Length: 345
Image (cartoon, rainbow, N blue to C red):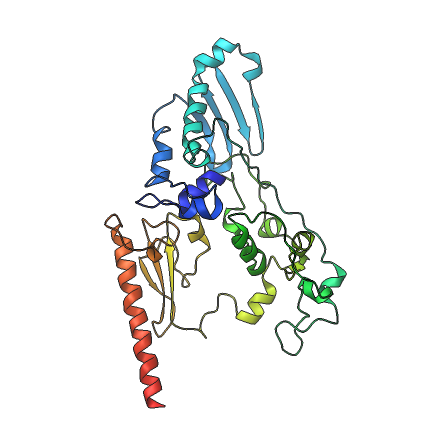
């Protein structure tokens, strides 16, 4: 999934190094509309025939004399029984070559790779929280009656950071993910009949609990950070966000105001966006969230990863122009309201 996710994030109408510099090899620009470029090599009939039910991941595929039967995570085929000539004549190598060209838009964005290092995705093991995570010497976090001790590694002693490795391009982002618990579960389940991936990452009839894990804290990222001389990271993580929900009220946004939640629908992150009850990615471009109208969700149908926050260009799709106009108007209104209140005081 990795190259498709990152190309979808960086699916802009212009060349950009934003995603490649953030989570890739550096300042090597992706082409304009990289997902469309990636799909060009696959945009033809390779002769694949299918039967069964993709939505239930129970189907059969054939290409020439090559056949495979799939039942969720299990598959069986006749490739071992075919000759080299039969495999070549099936056209499967042409299909694999086209797929190689497609993912090469990301893997070979540097234009110097002959082989691609494909990263594998493994589930994060569920581990118990260390006993030292809630030391009595720690201040409460946040400062309030009944709040738990602050579970950060600095509570276990006075440590000075001593990081001696080369700082990677994703160094800052990794720290944000660790400290802010950016757990993106909307792409955790793959191959369950609603996407192009296989095999399924979870069993048939899996529940949310199967994906997220039990309702308890787990070992955080402090152990790996401490080993590198970086102290202060959380010693525990809360996959269900119980603490954050209690303190910040989760998706209950009735007590906050003046926020524009923009979502580029080409960006995989949009599935984890903030929307009103009954709203979402299938709703209108502007969705009101608060009663007073000071919070809205904006949907950019042709938007990549926060395209609206980029500098304007002549290549911007209409949704980006519209979103910026709404954001500018709302920010101006907030400033006027704040000024009016200050004058009254």
